[in-house]
Image (cartoon, rainbow, N blue to C red; front, side):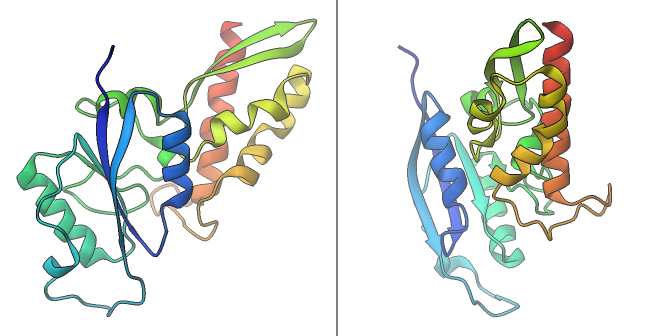
Length: 207
């Protein structure tokens, strides 16, 4: 039996609950060992973030949903000291892995089972009479949208699926629609839709 990869999560006022649920539901051989829920409504500048964090956390991977940059920077330093890779989607920090969205995480070394299951989506599709009769998720978004969308797509024609796929993903995606990527100029919600459409098109091409 394959051993479980341990994940520790840091969030503020429940900010990571949708992703935590998705990881627990779809992350086989992954276990979230601890969730640290820090308060919201903190001062704009935090001179000493240390009191907000435990000293004894250990894991194979850390995931941050911290909104406050001082908290994230402190956590990134601690993870670096402990040699724990840190993912902080949608944030900017040179000491962490920071994809724009959870579903735009590439296949990077050192992320273990999490990196195999979650990130840029990959599908396998089965067609019959130009209809999608099966849609298997090989890799998907940690929020679970990549899996949950399949029930809305199975039974559609290829053209129908192409027309609605991005929209259905955006309905399911929990990201803040006001978050924009300064590099692409697109919202995180738009990026989530796009990466899923590309994954579907790639699967259709192989079918």
